[in-house]
Image (cartoon, rainbow, N blue to C red; front, side, top):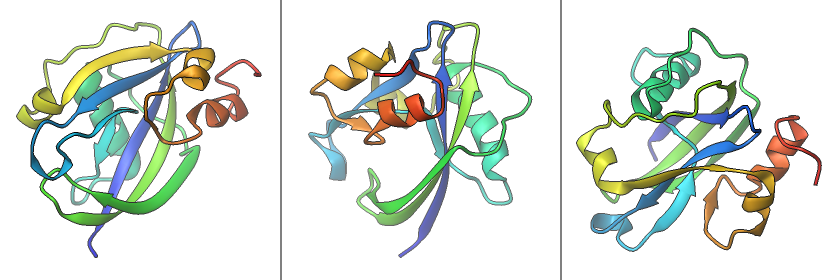
Length: 152
């Protein structure tokens, strides 16, 4: 199975809310899937996880940063891509605090435009109460443990 390294971003607003994108797949191998997930994406050949995190944040949100700190979490799991290929996803998460909550879609790829239906800033309470599918699982607990969210 091919490995797919990816950088994911835990983007935190001044109001201590986390940015998530809603993915709605209408066709292909993931047709019918509807979930919320953190911004991020695959590491390109020759690129570090950190450089991918900076690039993905810019491409998916329009937010520009110069650097990221060390990853705060990692997960490895089997993931089906929209084209039907199953890969071993190796994800590293980076915590980023931003001052501006404006999100730009200007650099989205055609695939992102097709499947990324919405974005929302989520409070800890909203994350804990939602019945929507949110990735990664346990996100509110992770953010609380990192000090990004208030204690439950």
